[in-house]
Length: 316
Image (cartoon, rainbow, N blue to C red; front, side, top):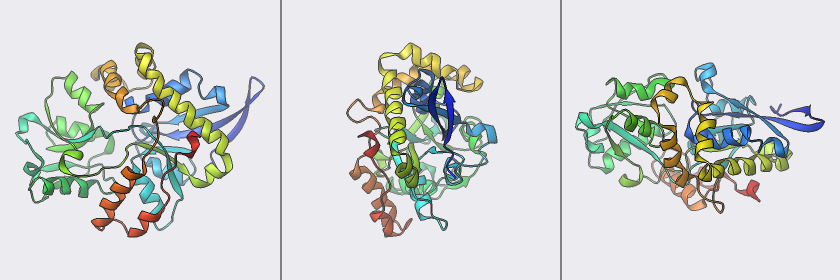
């Protein structure tokens, strides 16, 4: 059963939809918060409930919440779309919105560690989110830099992974430069950063919004309204920075509010949302490049190359 419910509000029919966040509220979610707070969703008949993973301490991943119909939409890396479509109990999932037009994630080590390139991570500890392909991607990065890919991988609690680097429990981890990178800068913590592109890894879109294909078939008009209102939310940040900061402040944790310069984080992120012409859209060549990279390394069967894993149709 879909998580879609119907209610009446001010004599107008509203459709209740649920969105599962991939992480505690952060700058990558700001478009959803703005669209909710400023009424962009309600204007098109949507009452959006946002599910925070902190509420269940990440007991269920966003992908699992989509699979179990706890959520209508989930935010996750593109890898989750691939995973859901190729697991034993297949889920017909599809990506419908790319939050970032360019990858702003990176592998990082403290500058004080003197780890100045990926090959120097050989024999060092890496705090992993246990995401699909993650460990292999980091090992490949090391190999592409001339190393062996010999990582000591650890799997801390997901919501505490960033702290393992700050406390010295891990030598490296994967971050979003527009969030943890801003926090490090705010605290005067210097990082050495290694991006996928620098080391010849054609990483895909992350994060994306995904749903079930059947949901689109049954509710295409309202799902299209959701996508368009979300786009409006992200684009709103461009000329409304002060208001955007105030809205984000209502959602982030007390820790993040006290440790991250939200204005800098939003300003850093704005160019990566895209513009009116491409905000939220995905390109076939980028998706194909990442999937080809995965299949070439035997991480997935080549059947993945022929699967329909994303769509831009809801923007039409």
